[in-house]
Each structure stands twice: as structure tokens, then as C-alpha cells.
Length: 82
Image (cartoon, rainbow, N blue to C red; front, side):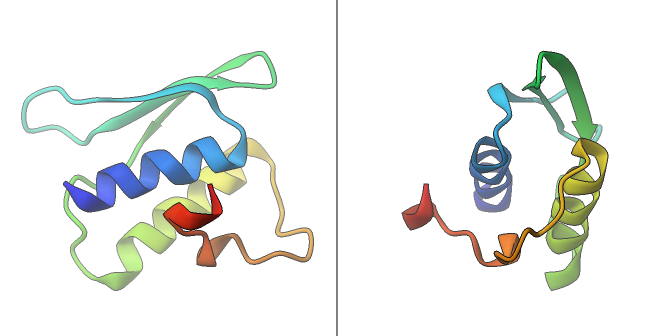
């Protein structure tokens, strides 16, 4: 699905190394990778639902990693930025 691939690109943009998506049946997909030497596991919506669901997932991932905007809007990241 397109939004899952875009979420993976966003995670790599944030600096998550060895990022991959794990799916287990009908459950939420999970992002698995490493950030600053620590393992990261993050579940996110498997379907976009509405336009806010992926924005909320991105925001929750940034909060989990302890990242802030630092003057650049991470919300506007596209494939061309990577």
C-alpha cells in the first residue's frame, strides 16, 4: 500500500537504520529498525482511514524518537527529499 511505503521512507528520513515493515496477518503493520543504537518497534495504522491518520502516526513516531521540528516541517517530506 502506498501510505505504508511512504511511512517507511519517512522513518528512514528521520534516521531510523535498517528500517523495515513487518506485517502479521490482519494486525497493524509494525515499523522495525534502529535509532541511536536502540531497537525501535512502532505499530501504525494499516489503512489510511482519513487524511489525519498518517499525519498522527508520523507525529507519534517523532515523539517516540524524541525529535522536534528544528525549524523544518517534517510533515512536508516527500520521496523527492530522500
